[in-house]
Picture 1 (cartoon, rainbow, N blue to C red):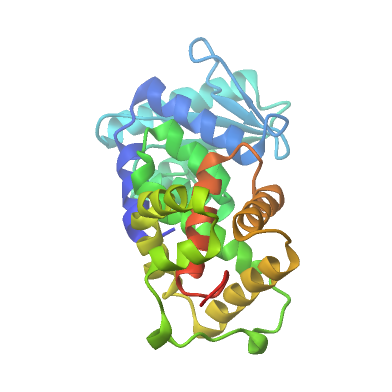
Picture 2: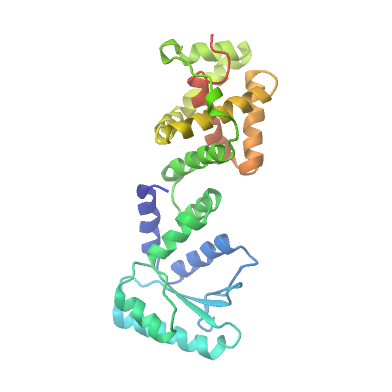
Length: 291
């Protein structure tokens, strides 16, 4: 996840307060641990427990104030910890305090004094979970929970498609077809060569609709190492060769295969971005008829 997108997530999380923050953490932990790994509790009269991390027998307590005030923070932590000791500690020995912003030294020591060895989770820890412990599909669910518009996470989609292609590549990049950029032809002419007359205008419209994402693909793709770029190209070229039928049919087959391997048949967002990647390589004359 790039730094700009991290800031978008961080800003959305830090403004969540009270039950809104609690609801978000419950949703995040359900995404992270699954329904069998995390048990949320009702928002009120929860006896100091906002949820249970099952495997580690950890009681979760959330605190989402408008601003940080050390006295209020300490009071809330002590109240939740007293409820933890009274109602939960015998069966669930671990306690986790989750805060909606970044933590200073005093905020950490307050929790450690209550429950030795317990480090509170602040905004940085929450972002670490999102960035490092969730896959792209799970991150999109978190983005939905935070109300982050899809335009902000478009790069995340494209990076996921490219990383998936890179991670599964076993072909030899030395066999890749290198097309001389001097000989590149206009994309509309290339579409006419590869599509039937009835499909040409539909294909042109699709390309134009996807053009902003195709341009974004070019920017992200060029950020990969040369060897990684070659592997991705090699993967797609070989997938194209192993499919059968017209260019349109092969494109559909490859896209469906990627959906089946990396996402699901109903993931229209993944389909959209996978198509953009394939059309980007089509524009580069790496797949399809070239002359």
